[in-house]
Length: 237
Length: 214
Image (tube, rainbow over all chains, first blue to last red; front, side, top):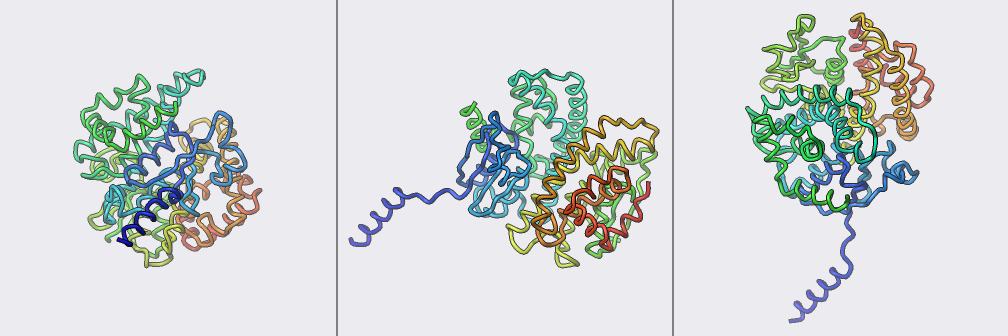
């Protein structure tokens, strides 16, 4: 009897003074790099606090922000006393630190799986990201920001991206996901840019008209974690 | 030999892998790729690197492409051979190394690659040098190096107080860049300059840099 009374009062105390969430992400969810980290946190089922950064007012270039992200970009990230930046590095950290939580295979469960994921993460970072980022800016953001689009730049990067996606088409005909049979960080890393190109531009067919890439995009974009990120993006627009 | 690197010494991305192998004291074989005749864009090379880029890598049955993924694989698999290039002592330490590897990959690489293309690669193929591009990219690079100067005023290496892949990944482009008239961008920043003097005089760096002849 005494035990259960004690337990109940402890529970009430916990509700009144909840543990401060140690994981903080700084930046707007509409930012592709921020959304990469959000997707990973949701896959790993890690509680976090999203702290807004008003980029239109230049908050990301303020002295206080530069202390946690010296390049003045989003996202910045903190986990207790650990302060990090670079979205792909934050994702890998989350997978290592919270290995037992949520999707435990997100960064592979053995060294060869990790190597394959790293390989396709590099392909994303070096081959996919540059042309797709330019297109996201030109096609999805420039119009909203009333910046004139550069057709030559759009054409050049569309051609580059198309060549990269030819390689993906072949790969995804041999393998369900980029690094192997399981969804991984390598696929996750592609979600932010692809989402904008498929849903906020007229070049979505670069992806959807390809049989294997289209199938892959359908699978990875319908994961609960990504749907939640898209919802977060809509709420802050 | 179990470890094979498909590429050639002049290629910066090949050099990145060779630097890692040399630092670890591992035996390897360089398998030349006949790039002049487009071998890298055809089979059988494409089965090693589907993007048709240099290098590709084999370690027994393991095949990997992307130089930064290859070096990470080597540093992990052969963690106890030679020096620890990943800062494996703790997750926080290794994550900071990883962060500065990403900085190299996404902040440093792009302007540096554009500058080297204009100043060193284009002349080889008789393509005109575009001074405007060099100027624009040098400005971008300067801003990045300002952050490096601040970082390296607090610790000896980018990942902390020990040499790691975070530093090593920068070496290939810097080897070429320091041979150009624009090298003052590095030497004018005291901490970046001291860092370059340190990492460029490592025996593994000297050995690989010697083979990087245009």
